[in-house]
Image (cartoon, rainbow, N blue to C red):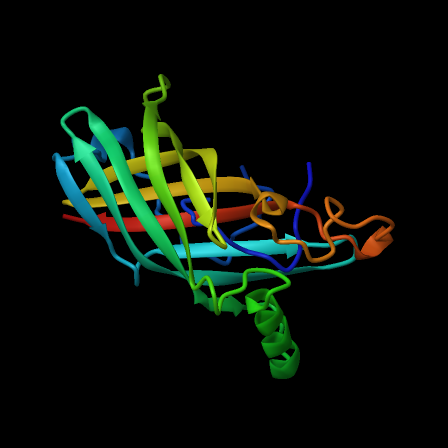
Length: 216
């Protein structure tokens, strides 16, 4: 499976399948099923400060990792469970956390924001809108989320697994997602657009991990 270096993403959301290692990011501590309560129907606004979106990118010889902020988001619940939602990532908030050299760090972040990657000046947000939700049959608060991911004004469908829980009036959700950056015209050193890149190739599959907190 392909992986991408120097790139984040998602969304989207929700993002959001992962070869990521995210020990450096805070994720909701799984609760015992005995502690879970039924989620009351209604709209739950995402706490953008408590929510984390992590990214990592790999090449043959090295990798980089960082975060991107959530601009806004909402989860919608019906009496039968999660029914919809939408999210936006603030692409101007892209950060790298593994490079300690400030000049190298700034150069990488600037490159990610450039037309080589996400063209943040013209496309300051990435969005994901849920189109369908499938509750998995394992009885462990697991869902299959499907929706539309929009990057650089280009929209494609995306599906990924997510775990959604509720306790004390607070909803937590964790998700991993993988999308093909070539579909969104993110061309830099992509084998889908250029030949004979050798070890300079940056793989197309982008993986992200989201840890989300929402309240009514």
